[in-house]
Length: 182
Image (tube, rainbow, N blue to C red; front, side):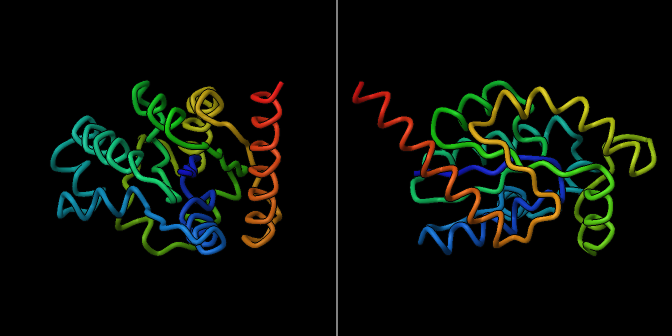
């Protein structure tokens, strides 16, 4: 099984990927870290030096490569589902879980993360909260189309979220088994 976590920045993808992998005895990969490893640059550097299209090309390549693996929990970048082909690859090869959070929660989490400023570029000219709201509105239909499961991360600990995701995955697998035996 391949489990893919999607959602906006700071919704818990990396934290939950690590915890889920431990519980499932899987490997886990943060796609953004893999992109930086392969390119030898931070994401902010890629955006500044090569532009967003070059970053999205590399992101699509990395996601496609990682989606060939099994027993992996993948924390996909916030914009990974933006490309149709990447969305199709993720849905076809794994179970996609969309992690939700309110814009204010996202901003609070981003502000508390020292790596956000050095590794993640601003994607619009707006202020941070306006950017989050604008991009969430634009991405919501794409995330929804990509996801097999939707999980709200508000007011829940990482451990509670892991338990919820595992429970919902088990129910989803049960439903799939009922459909095939019917």
